[in-house]
Image (cartoon, rainbow, N blue to C red):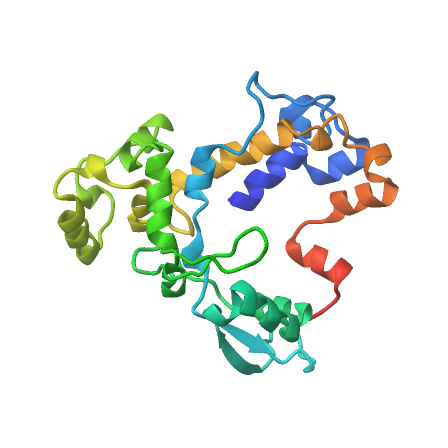
Length: 277
């Protein structure tokens, strides 16, 4: 569904084949947002909104270990190269992480990550190694105070006065919850939510709600985050001059525009710039 939505934004209802053949015709609905004559800011200066930042907290996708794969082995399609080592993620972050990743090499990193499943965006799945971070300053030097990123993310939303889960959904014209059972069927989660928030569902923090909510079948993210992503995906295309008035060979070069129009996935980018398995 997400792919269909993004392709609709880019190519319009007439589709990619029609647009590649005849160019941008029929306005935004039929021809897509990309290639319009001028940007549309809707009288609001373009920016990534605070709401977008708040629903884009996806750290639960990160694993505890990176499974390094043997890139010297040639395999058939849909086959995973042999596992040679599991590297703890704490060894791959910060200053020592830069050194470790340089030794592993870009190709092995990409192949290994491409064959490893990500985590689920659910409660109790936040990486523990992100809860005791040593941050660096602008010069790349370690700072003295360690950071609990999970706690920091919740605090940042409160500092910026981002609406809590229920009020956030109402602002998107989505149905709010009136009891914890409206949020999830997980009895353990419900019990924990009651211990933290009592019976006041209006106190539910946005990030906690995004992780706790029962996902729509086939969705990896919550309905709330999905709506924000769709709105922002549209906004980022129609308000950017490099996708509208500057979307031409003069700006991109002929080859560059060809790359933009033919690239469908991250795999296309990797195959073009760093051919690997």
